[in-house]
Length: 150
Image (cartoon, rainbow, N blue to C red; front, top):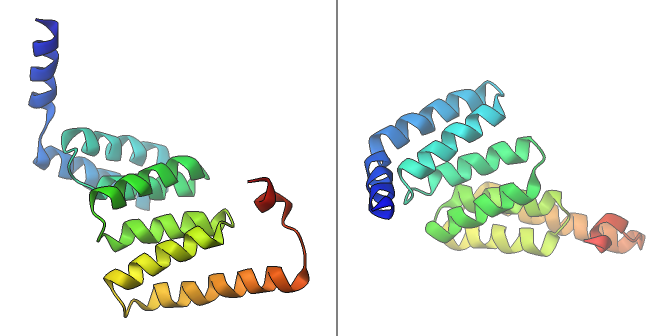
């Protein structure tokens, strides 16, 4: 009996309209720099409409702002898993990998964007930037301790 009541409660909570309202509220909080509050709204949007990939991307952006890189990456991964053609999700994923100096993973994500949109100027520029960063590191012969530890 409890299981069916719980399922009924969960189904009653589902609402694409309320999910969109929560997402929009999250967007306003994000613009105001209120990232923890925005995360709560995006999480609510995800619960109300679990099939929508956009709140995952938005929440990943919040986690990036807070320096929570693993949580950001988890949401970005989920976003592109749900919609492999969503460029913003791939862009978030690439940025996270780039920040963590996981250049090969960043390049993979930028190349995925270019498969979807071969004329994407930002992705083209970022591929050049990442390649330059890799080449610079290789030329100096310096060992990046942080990167090596990861």
